[in-house]
Length: 83
Image (cartoon, rainbow, N blue to C red; front, side):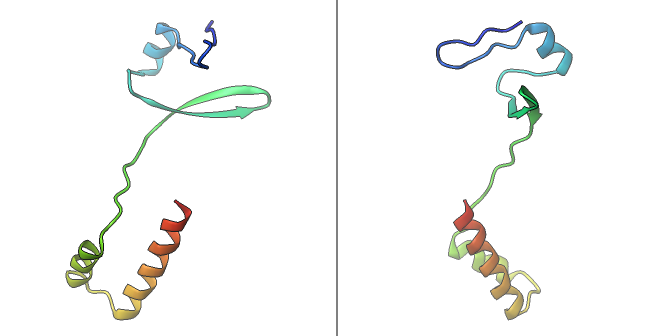
């Protein structure tokens, strides 16, 4: 069993953590399915936002056509707006 604290935190029992190989700092996704709280171990992948200078380095070292570069820039800009 686990208890919800005033801050909304829950401590997973040691036996559960051990059986899943979870350690301090691991990230869990939280979802609700059929009225149940589901915790799923997750992986966080860092995202790098590229400066104009770094993008210029990629372009200089690539075999992309000018059209390819324009398309990529549009996609990067729309992805950046989505956050």
